[in-house]
Amino acid sequence: MKRKDYISWDQYFMSVAKISAARSKDPNTQVGACIVNDKNQIVGVGYNGFPRGISDDVFSWDDSEDFLESKYAYVVHAETNAIINSVSRLDNAKMYVTLFPCNQCTKQIIQSGVTEIVYDSDKYQGLVAVQASKRMLKAANVKFSQFSGPEIIFKEK
Image (cartoon, rainbow, N blue to C red; front, side, top):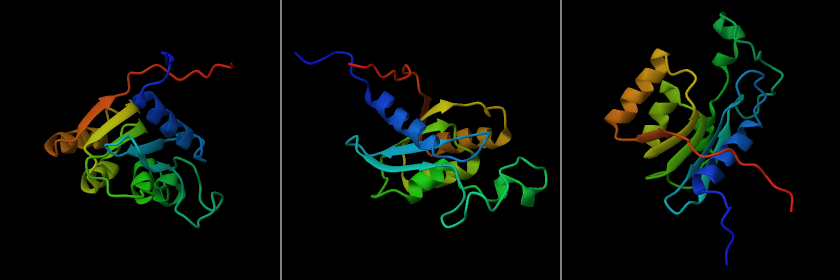
């Protein structure tokens, strides 16, 4: 008889997104994303960080109001990195992301063909950028839902 305490697909893929987030050098917000196809195969992962070839020590990680001195001018978001890093077409794919996507990432998610988003945190839900994201996702018929599974706890055997 098979064991019954195995994790769900949602738990598995959200865990991959969270592990990816742990690669981020951002001292305040670490975000990870995992994209899977309709066969439950991982086809892309990403985390928030500076563009390829730019050292993590060149630009500031601060939230400065001076745009050129803030991380916001330079960081590529996890969702965008997962799309760029994908190994196949993303039509009908599902994205697991640790933080609800901003409006810029949402445009890329829609354009890439992803049709469903499972997110963990929605801590910026009051921002107009997130409200715009939700409006676009609804207009494009991209489903989104908050992850509801329990956290993964590894047991020693």
